[in-house]
Image (cartoon, rainbow, N blue to C red; front, side):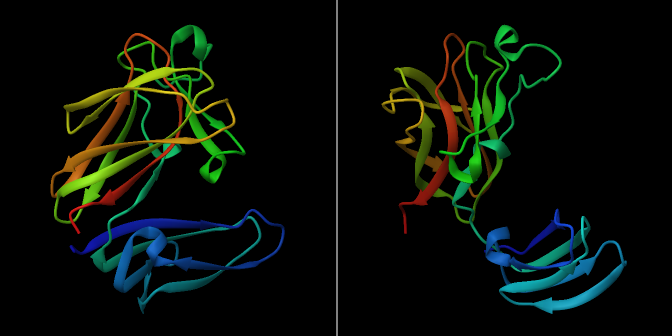
Length: 210
């Protein structure tokens, strides 16, 4: 595993002070993690596993973390992906531009929807990290109350085109694909240049070379 640096923020939306526990494995960091308080401009020392911080009412704390090791992230939510055609100035359906929507049936309560019908109305995850590279199972969580298709690319290389149907517009189903990642950062793209795509909840990676 490689060392890693990462910035993160802790926000308290409540009307009273709150103790928040930051678990470093949620940030894909392990080993000894050295923290710096950005607001206070001072180093806080080294921590392992987790960090406890008191955040005032409606307050925010921002930190820089430097870890011994960068862990491989398994799940990438759709709302953390990039929609090339994204905009909110005009009607997204008329403009063929995807959006991020709240969805109680989805992981973390969000999904990417209204994708497809245009080459640029896609969904892209950048900086998908693999420690050593190799073969993975890519599991795509989707919602589609009718049969819809999408194509998948990894680092610009076509993987295939898939037609899927989850049963209804509340059911989340999984399409699994075998892919190969290079060592370091990768890009995964889902798209349909001519027709509607299914809504996307998240993607998940499982290293099958272990």
